[in-house]
Image (tube, rainbow, N blue to C red; front, side, top):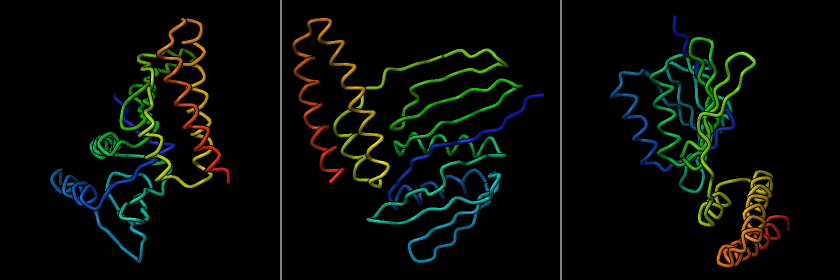
Length: 197
């Protein structure tokens, strides 16, 4: 028999009031029962199909931020809707799906699946690995929506990624790419200095 369990971890998700209302309409259109409780800037939505039963949001600066970092789903329809929401709102998550004792791990960054890994017992196979190209606009957007302690590891990752691309460009003698990465590193360095102040 097919087993379907889905877990989303490392979830980073923010959206506007319109996207929030759209999510509720989507749940309603799929006949999924839910209730919403709002106290000050805290929102809780209880949804049938979640193992824990509820999602917790904080409303700040016109955006809803999901506070739960790990979410387990008992209903595949709710799981599918949540994955689509992450992708539509350009969020981040690691999605784990277990089907017939095979684990599939989908890594989503900025709303795009960048890697799919299949784990079957001791065997691990990468089914898809998309090289991520993160734009400065995405980096700046992420700074606006993350707390300081969350910014620094992300920025270090971006610097490492840019340094890797610069090293490759230097090895290839690609002068255009070298200049592009140098400019990007200058901006990233400036952001790191501002963040660490």
